[in-house]
Each structure stands twice: as C-alpha cells, then as structure tokens.
Length: 65
Image 1 (cartoon, one colour):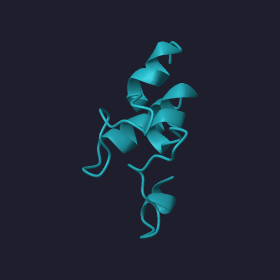
Image 2 (cartoon, one colour):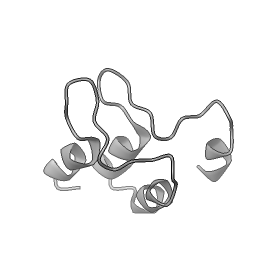
Image 3 (cartoon, rainbow, N blue to C red):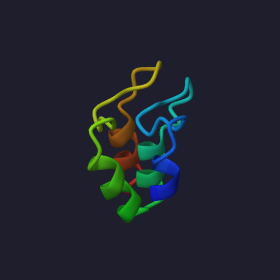
Image 4 (cartoon, helix red, strand yellow):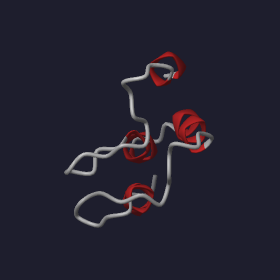
C-alpha cells in the first residue's frame, strides 16, 4: 500500500460516483492498518462525501467496521 500511495497518479482521497474511495473500502473491510495509514495523510479527508452525499467513513462504520 505504501508503494502504491507514492505514485503520482494515485488519489487516495478520491471517490467515484459510487462512493468507492480507498478509505471507505479499507474501513469497510476491516483493514485497520490501511485506515490508519490513509488517515495519517493530509490528502485524505475522513469527512468527505461522494456525489450521493454519503460521508464515506460513516458509511463504512454503519456496517460495524
């Protein structure tokens, strides 16, 4: 994951129309280490939302992750 995040073309804070941001998927799938890594970055906002208005991290937390 660290190698992937070093690439310029990777946007770790981005989300698609269907709310598929890296932070959302890491939290939803219980990847605690990756969540911590992403939350430690300035370009990842845990309060960001996708086009539908869903807040990404809270959506993952709703599923008990």
